[in-house]
Length: 308
Ligand code: SF4
Image (cartoon, rainbow, N blue to C red; front, top):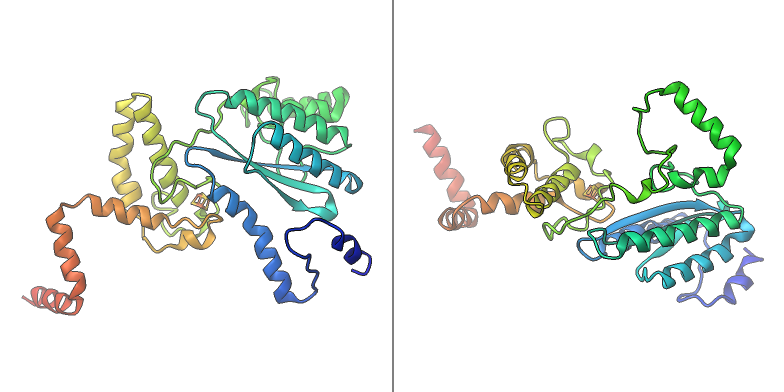
């Protein structure tokens, strides 16, 4: 702390740096750090995909890598990006928002990724630190590990999976452009859920997860319906819409448990409540609004009705 404080005092920070061993103060600082993802992902423009990366460099190269990354964001016009991570491990996460529904986006993203890979490997870093390689970094595994090691990885993979049926295109792939295929587009659907990043944190807490669908699936299905309609596939859109009523709307408990786990604070129940309300005519809604205002009398009347 004694060594860090004078260094921190000389940095151009927007607020003075606070160092604390006090659990409450530490928890408050962690709250800000963990909220960065939610703040940026939740505020991204509707229709864009949030992309999160996970690289690591030797600690002595960390500051230079951050500065160079910020420069890359500026050059490729990723204005609302954010860098965070675990400084003591040289581990950086950064997030950028991209619109993949046409235009110059895939080419811009491809150029950015090439330069980012050169930057990280040039600093003696690794393209994945604590998360899986997946598809986006698959074309660069050979570049990071070299031909000999990569060929060993391929051999192990083909011994375990000779027909290549396990996770095709993930981690080990012969396609140099695998990271630009099957890009997830996020059509604008409903204002209550458009900021969903499909992370799935809400799924374990949802009471309907083993019955029909989870909050994530309820949102993804709305997006699939919108995508099918946009593509003119009316049969698929109708099929999904028909199944949606029971699988998503009727079987949601609207208890808001999803909002307790969601990093961008989505309560899928809000969407479901609106969809349920829209199923009814104006007169029915007015009737129930009136009943809600006199709920005591309503329940007494209902009880009498049941007695009868
Ligand atoms: S927790 Fe669920 S609703 Fe929230 S962003 Fe993740 S998938 Fe979407």
